[in-house]
Each structure stands twice: as structure tokens, then as C-alpha cells.
Length: 330
Image (cartoon, rainbow, N blue to C red):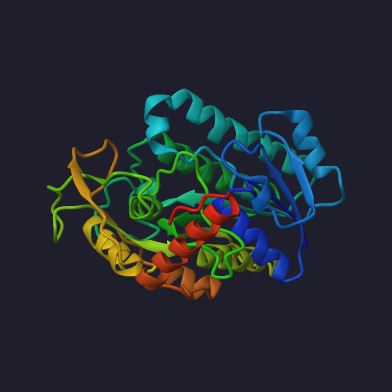
């Protein structure tokens, strides 16, 4: 298949490009590099451009017939979405609609969307099932839920789609070709590891009074390579003519923030100072996935569910990345 991957220079997108290449697909990456990095693109075909630029989108589809679109491109910074919701909707909703319009124009049959567990908001129960109520608490979450609904409506126009609701993406390619590389970093595990390297004075723990086993938030951490596998499985399901839909991607096991910090201490063998801070707006107490539907329909299950393995790959990548960048610290 010839696959267009928007946001393919980003974290999950780049790992998915690697998985597609390994199974023999032809890949075109489209990215504006606002959050992605050119050095993480492993395929030859790369189009620099923004979803809001019609000419750039046309270039993305111009190199030959596209069979499928995997759509990762988005502003994923939740704090930024709260500070500037209009810009979040412009990037994530309007940009996605522009992409979908171009896909319809080119008669694309298959569309896989990178969604988020943030569509659930504060869940009514744990683990969360796909049919549970959607009540996103942030503009970011609302942008994802809105476009999921658009894709459901477009199914009648010949585009078969799957929406994949990530829980907490983490870790790095075990081969260390790829990993997380955000500037600034906002995700928990790399922030903790940066403190282990001495690049930060401490780790801020936002909220210690949640109704959880140690008072801190609980999250379901899923290895990024497992997320990549799920996108390949979703695409294959659509190619076989089977129905699309929405799927949770996690491990079914949740860890508190304090437990993640302890896992990072064990892996690195380094002290990691922690400072308690007030809760952040939009943070649910706990998000843990029920992944039974993805297991049954996609034949997918996480290959790397162990938290210490996830942390180890993130740690090795971070140190490798620093060496590549000429940073000898750590």
C-alpha cells in the first residue's frame, strides 16, 4: 500500500512510519515540523507543509496514488489548548477537515485517526470502555472527539475509518532509531528522566490529593511501538473490508505518578527530587483502558506492557539522543 502519514516526523507518527516500512508499505510523510523533527523521518518521501495550506496538501497527494491516510498531525499540548482554545481548534479541527476534504477529492478509501483517551474526560468507571460517555474537559480533547464524529459521518461517503484512542504514550523504539523528542517536553516519563540526568532540578507532581492509592494521578502507559503496531493492524482491518470504529489503546494497568518516579529511580539508579504542586486543570484522577475490543477486532495486544521496560527504552533513547546532539551529560 501507498500510505500518507501526516505528522510522520512526530513521536507516534515516526514509529508508525517505521512499522509500515518494515511490512513493505510505501510511505509519504507530511509534516510542518512544528513539533516533529526531520531526522526522525525514515522514509524517502517527505513533504514539508501545514494542513491549513491547500497548496502543501495538494503536493502531499501529487506524487502518486494514495491508498490510505494515517492522521497524526495535531497540536497535542493540553496546557496550550487551555490557554488558546481557538488556535487549538484551528489546528486540530480545521486542519483535519482540510485533510479530509483533500482525501475525499482523491478518493481515499482508508483513514486511521490518532485520537486520545482525553475524549472521556473524568470517566464514569474503570477500566474505560469505548462506549462509555464522552465528556472531554479540554479543548484538545474536544477537538479529538469532534473529528471522530466527523469521520463516522463520512463513512457513508466511501471512506472507511478507525479512530485510535491512545492512553499515555511512552517509551522509545527498542532499536533506538527513534524516540520522544519534544521541545519543550510535557510528558511525565521524559520529564522525570530529564531530572535524573540533572537537566531539571526536580519533578513537579501536580496534585497529591486525588482519590487514588497514593493521592497522585493514575495513567495507563502504553509503549509507542505497540501504538505503531495498532495503526498497522487498524489499516489492515480496513483493507480487508471489515468495519471501522473506535478503539482504546493501553495496557489495562494503571500506575500513579509516584510509582512512575520510583520506576525511573530503579532504572536509572539516580536520585530524582520531587516537588508537589497544585492540580492542573483538566487532569482526571485516573485513566485506564479496557483493551478487549482492540484485542478482539484488531488482533492487537501490547508486546511491551512492563513499565520498567518502557522506562528503560525511554532512558536509553534519551541518552543516545543527547550523544547525537553532542551533549555529554548523563
